[in-house]
Image (cartoon, rainbow, N blue to C red; front, top):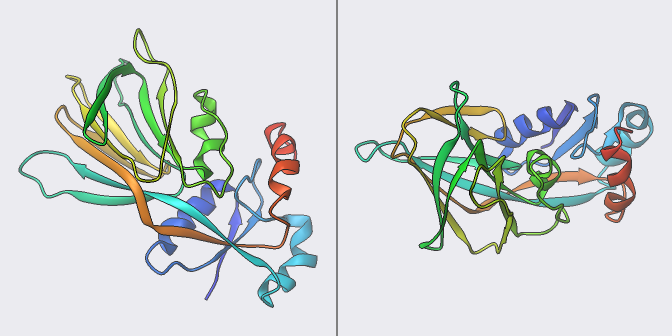
Length: 226
């Protein structure tokens, strides 16, 4: 089985949510602007898609995150999976949120910021990059913890090993938001806890371009070229 994703990176992220349980490989054809995760442009698809469908490509396995949300102590936890990122951010009220962060049970800091991003290597070229985070090689299993526009609080990105467990606790009086890959968006009240770790699930993509093409295409895509 295969999933053919036609669109941009947003379409790929939706396809990854569909494929997470079955681990079905995805072929991405870019009709959007950047297309970091898509494999073929619309012009390439006619010539190269048949070869992919005949099994001549290679399988690109990407790390994912598992996010467990405990909204209140009385509610059972809910689990989500992210290919790109898990974001805790301010809600409708334009005020900073306070987020207590710990890693492997050890306190790190309390962020006073527009939000906090936990991003995979795949997500390192997305929202995390816009927030000042580094770019990781897409095959890396490390993940990133970055604040969004911090105000008088820690402003650095932490690169975490695949074994790390990140705990984020909302301590702000007004409502915040939890976003999974930019598509699943849930309101958060004070006291909500989100636990993020490396997932045993992975994203699978069929590729035809060589793995090293990531480097040659990176600068072009950052400049808005296809």
